Image (cartoon, rainbow, N blue to C red):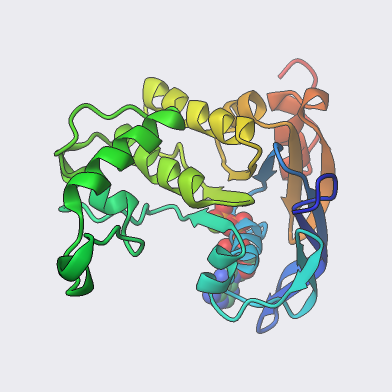
Length: 255
Ligand SMILES: Nc1ncnc2c1ncn2[C@@H]1O[C@H](COP(=O)(O)OP(=O)(O)OP(=O)(O)O)[C@@H](O)[C@H]1O
Ligand SMILES: [Mg+2]
């Protein structure tokens, strides 16, 4: 990995669905240890941009550069292998599996020897290691053997983000991770995002909850009708000015 260069560069990305231009010449540069807010009204193009970053969709034009190298994803798996983990709005945890199994889903630790070669998994190691690793990224869950279905919405979301933080090499993309969460649960999620930043990961945080975006990000990129209308350090925004930039309407005096 290059030390100084951006971990992710999007350069002149355009994408359309038939006659709908969802993204129009969008560029973005993201560095390690940076939390970037991606905001915009419904239909602004956020999810389309996420899908392009995570290999769900290809752009019509423009370049995706990861760690200095131009990439053409053929599938989300390609993007994951390049160190990009994405958490979609409906978290992809399997509710009836234990937390450990969820953390290692698709990346299971096999038992040693013949059992391992026959496909038996080392459940104990997975559970122990999962809890240790989650704690390292700031996620504490009550009991090791609990299945995901027994966790609260906030705990589930924290586990899902924890999993992304654990496996990500470069970039974590989070689509509305605090949606439907209460104040305390949201804070837990924001805490995990900060831990991801401390680990040197780049986090792209998509949200309509503007106070959370202001609270946790270093920089905010505003999309309107598929174009970047502002890309500035978070310190240059207030919730009111951010809202005005998103809608394109200047807040009325005294409102
Ligand atoms: N599969 C699709 N087929 C046709 N048009 C689409 C499709 N997906 C998105 N669009 C259109 O592309 C534009 C951008 O949509 P996108 O989902 O990227 O917006 P968004 O910023 O994620 O919005 P939201 O905040 O509502 O999730 C919109 O005009 C939308 O209607
Ligand atoms: Mg969306």
